[in-house]
Length: 247
Image 1 (cartoon, helix red, strand yellow):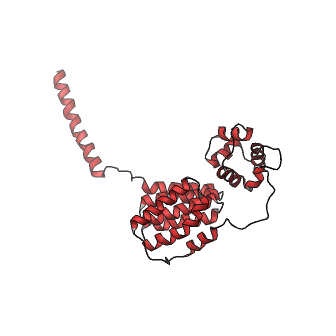
Image 2: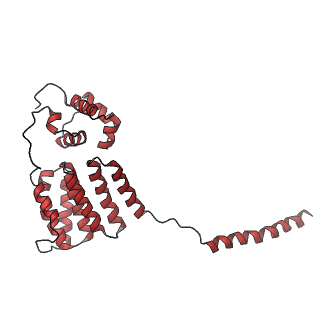
Image 3: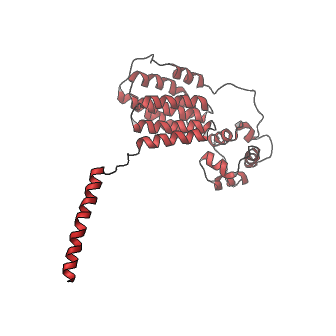
């Protein structure tokens, strides 16, 4: 419950103005419509999910408690479990024996499902062990997936710099595979956007897109010349034929 009577939508509008952002700018950073922002600020649309409030607070660079009208608690460190994720990212050799690929795919799928259902607290506890497991397997595909999950989770937890590190690990794991590199670049762009580095995020996205686009094919010079020569050779013959027909 909030400790004052100011609606949360009005607080969102107040902080948006303080950050010199228009409704459209806020909507773009949230990947939502301007209409959605307008309805939130007018109280027409309720903010009943804490994950959405966290996302708003992150973009507006305030604590979620400020939007909720709650007194700010004493400064705290990173969310529980983030230090374990940081330690797992700092390890380059897995401390455990590699597991079977099918079991690892099941774990990666479970982690993605947990993320999609916003079970972040549960996922924080799972990610360190998952990172250790996929490092032992040395599968580029599984490594990219695990690092992408880690990066996405860290963005949601407000750890943008650590999220960028995880996304960069995904890019390294992708190697020369253009598809894996492109999917990893999505995480790089998300982490950079969370750090308010929109231009770098766009650059990373375009670079990945260029890697997977097919190279344009042009006809060889001799083919162009041959076609042009063939057309040139035919034209006098056709004209002569037309002349005889007309005569």
